[in-house]
Each structure stands twice: as C-alpha cells, then as structure tokens.
Length: 197
Image (cartoon, rainbow, N blue to C red; front, side):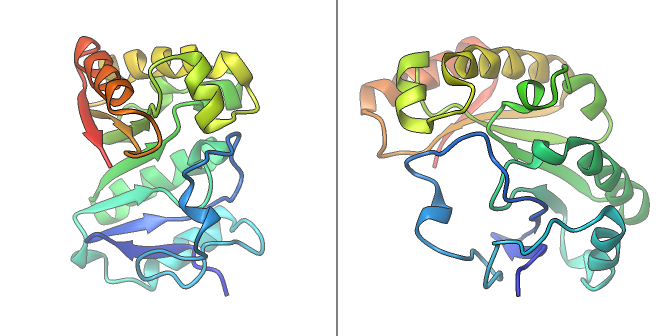
C-alpha cells in the first residue's frame, strides 16, 4: 500500500504524484521505495483532493508545525490541486506550508505559477543542482532540455520577490566542490538562502 502522507524529519510530508519532468542521477527513489514513516511512496493512483483531505483527518495535526509538499514526484505536476490543499492546511489546521520543488513548475504548467502561491506557500526549497545549463542537463536529465536551467533561475527570482522563505539547494556529491561553490555564489547573488544536502 502506498503512503499519501508521511512523517519525515519532524514534519508531515505530502506525496501526491509520482510524475516528474526530470530523471536526476541522484534521485532517492532510484534506491528505495519509502522514506521516513512511509513504507512505499509509489502511488497506485494519484489521490483526489477529497481523498487527501480525508487523509489529513487521520493524523494528529497538532504534532506538526509544518506540512511539506514533497514525495516521489514533482508536486507542481498537480499545481492546482496543491493550491487547494495548501489553502485547506492553512484554513483548517493553521500550519505553515513548504514546497520542495525542482523549480520547473512554470514550465510544467505553461504559466507563471508564483503569483498563485502567494499566501498559500510560506517557504520554498528549490533544487538547483548545477551551476549552468549544460551540467544541469547532464545531472538532472530534464525533458525540457536546455530550457530547464534558465527557467529555474527565473523561478528563483520570482519566488524571492513574493514568497517569504526561499532556499536554493544542491545534492552534494554529484557535482564537483567547485561547482557546488558556484551554486552557492549564485544563490547569494540572487539574495536567497543556500543549502547543500
């Protein structure tokens, strides 16, 4: 049985899709079926919004300060549903909402999605993972090809202007230290936080 919600690092995580435009060489789902309290994050089918609402009722929401959209897929693949659920989390449970994303949501949805996240997403972590388009293509193997990297940079800048907490991250060990340092420099130049994970 697949897990829709799961506990990880003290937060409650939302796994609503397995779809993703990337095939990253470091993707955790290449090596394990589950994380945290989840036995399996491979979904037999994507849960409806109503099914997700019911799933939250099964958890003691008082135990969590934050709900995180992050599972075995890119959450913005279901952007409109994610926005409904984020509103529900704020309204019903008064919890902070974070999105962990590859930063390609605007390309995926064919529009600038950042304005729609205002008031719904409180913090966002965006995976950069490379200092340029060529290396990004090698490491993250996006279906968007060379268009992916500049779109991520635009997305970071848009989020910085509208979302309270923006962090850019890289997965350590898959690019050189010099490239990782360049990613950190880029994050600082865009005036956002940086994390190596």
